[in-house]
Length: 588
Image (cartoon, rainbow, N blue to C red; front, side, top):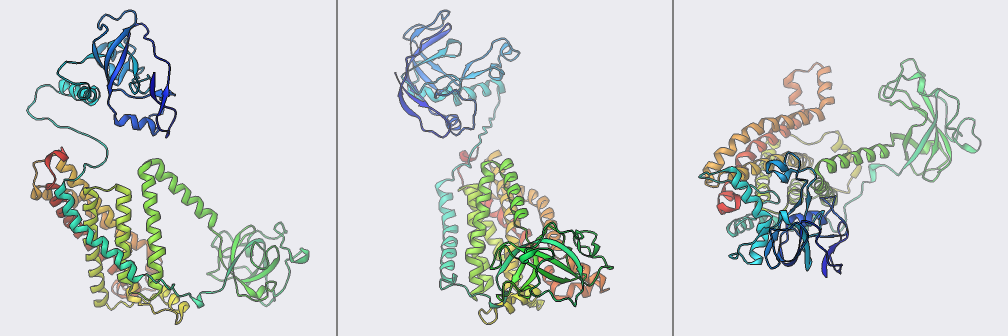
């Protein structure tokens, strides 16, 4: 006979000639007339139900005619029209089987999963789990009732008589009605078009300027030994100790840390004024060669130890001359990659496919940030405009990739968009009112490095940071409020827009306090060294807050918090408006 055979995860069903099944005791042989397709069939193909019989004939909503039977079958005769459901066999002796709850049997086997099903010309089934099909149903009409219909009927029978009934389903968000799709298109399409046009207008197609003052190339090196040294000692051109040809000696007998340092980041005040680092170059023009670099021991000097991997700034001079190099940092690539992999594994382990979608969305955010926003700002475009357009792109990508295309997601996008605009407006107004220049140390260093290659607006750069920093928390608030409105609509489809708004706002008030606290603490943590500096300087609270760097964080925090607070009623109102215009049947 012909059958559609499933051979393994991810493989399509294949039309195959297989042997005709024979009914055993208590089984009937059925000529299949119709077999409906269920979402569970796709779960099996996707490997989400991992114990499938292989090779397997799927299909568990079978309607057909009995053409043969095994010993012990007296309920059916050849010619009877019967249906075969998902539950295909149970043990018959456990507590569940003896109390009419055989669907909970631990040893149960299922049609189209562990027993060959109905995607074939013929099938065999346990007669105890077959049903006679009434004549009023056609084959095609009856087949779907053998899964969803059986489940619904059993639930209704167990629930008993009642005046109201609630139906619950799970899966993707219900599709929006035509009216809702039109409304969302009217609101969102212009925003999407404006974002694309903005990117085309602001992107520097001729290329972003370079930073001639940002320093030369960098090379990597391994610290072979750390020894106390006299600061007057000249190390130019000096080979590493005890190593001919200038090769550094990783195993050289020397103190393991500079000047008896107690640990990373700690300097022993009793040490000599400098330390000599024996370095083996890992790459660059002197790869494989060794040099000795003398480093002054100061309160801001990190602790170096044998085996450290460091980064050197190379001036471009003689590659064998120590004066051509300066130790500027530690290598952190391996640890950062490891942390990134742990993060990705944790997200995928908990979120599964949702986690994968979240990581893809995160990648899209970096593409927009690095591929568009940074080059555009470096090219002299207005930073606030670039930040708003880039944030819109990130918002569209992150929300739709993470939560799917639906009316619910589109509502969260609208709420985020309006709230983001409000944060941008508040930040612009109060940076001007507070006379914030944006000329903090990193910005001044950037301007100095660029020289005359670019014309940066420091205050605009500050505003851009405000907008980008608030976007992530805004997503959380708007998605939560939108979900709350949709759940309320599903529970009670009779609620109108005003009632949905009032109910969801009670949830939003609980959420907003934690969201604002999160934002404040995040900014306070970032500014902690600065706060400690002002505390040590003995300045009053008013003087500390009024300082340029602290005032920038205050405006960032308060403007962002006002935007978060406003996001709750804005998003809730939009969600209530959209949800209330969906047909009641789509949410119940």
